[in-house]
Length: 73
Image (cartoon, rainbow, N blue to C red; front, side):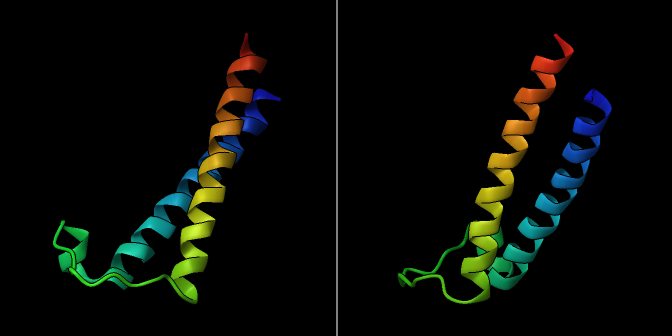
């Protein structure tokens, strides 16, 4: 069971890395390195989907991490 959880964690971590890189590319290089526009704007379309998917994958990664620790104990 522990091996399967580790494989799931690796897959989720790769997906998280890819999604975070996609988010930073869609925001532009200035925003990626801390420069932000003073204009407030809402997330729409693909940007909103990537944001929600990042949260979901982060929660799933956390749950699989806790399960991995519990199974190994």
